[in-house]
Image 1: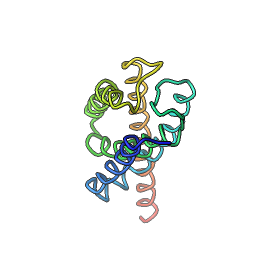
Image 2 (image 1 turned 120 degrees about the vertical axis):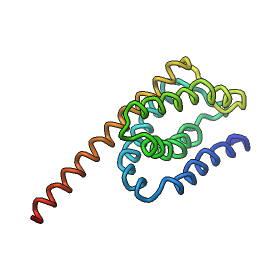
Image 3 (image 1 turned 180 degrees about the horizontal axis):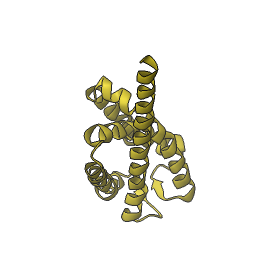
Length: 164
């Protein structure tokens, strides 16, 4: 049985980030959708691996991937990926710094707050290892967006040549 505290937390981490997408803009939503959608299944695979290796522990008695890890992926991961790309794509240094700050805050500050609230704590990872676990995916996200835009640009150029 899920505790009320955990249920409220899960609902909040799913709804609030998705509501923020109302402010991303339709053009940016279309532009960054593919890269953000690509990273979600990748993150689910990472969560399954972390769940099996017990890198973190949830304080609920019965362990459930759907109740514990999945809300982190379905909630903040897709919208935050969109926001990171919107705020910094095209400026790789800014993207790297912005992701380092965001992932660092989550790995070193937010995870400690969640532990105090008895939701989740790190088990077999240090805070730094957890930061690396979060941070390396930013480079994949940027790479997928770069390739998406490169392919899209080539198709646009081919269409212009075909119309000439």
